[in-house]
Length: 127
Ligand SMILES: Cc1cc2nc3c(=O)[nH]c(=O)nc-3n(C[C@H](O)[C@H](O)[C@H](O)COP(=O)(O)O)c2cc1C
Image 1: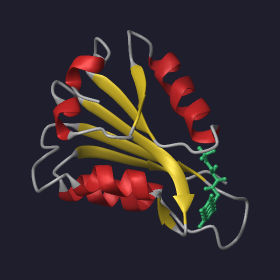
Image 2: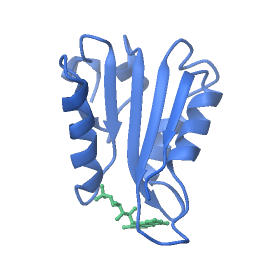
Image 3: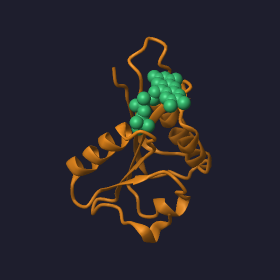
């Protein structure tokens, strides 16, 4: 999916999510609806860096898979290089099992975005 397939919200906000069973999608769409002003939640599958054109606030969310972000989310984040997100504010959230050994994805996603130069990074931890 490229930049022509969807638009960011009026405030340049994009919610990118991965979801195999629908849980993360529900949360991503709720966040987009709450932000309003045309904000879209888009699946990460096949998403390239061109999708970030004009994005001022990037929110990424996905399930924890094996104590880390899902493979599809990792593939998306792996495209980022140093400075890819310079000037972009960013936030990350994950969904997980209610286990004491659940691991972490939001923190790792936030770290990758920090390396890519994003500012004002927020990592949401759900219990
Ligand atoms: C292959 C696989 C690995 C998973 N690994 C973890 C994990 O390490 N820690 C955790 O808390 N949950 C783990 N889960 C549970 C999912 O993160 C959780 O059910 C999530 O909400 C699913 O999101 P989705 O419905 O959007 O796909 C795993 C699920 C699958 C299918």
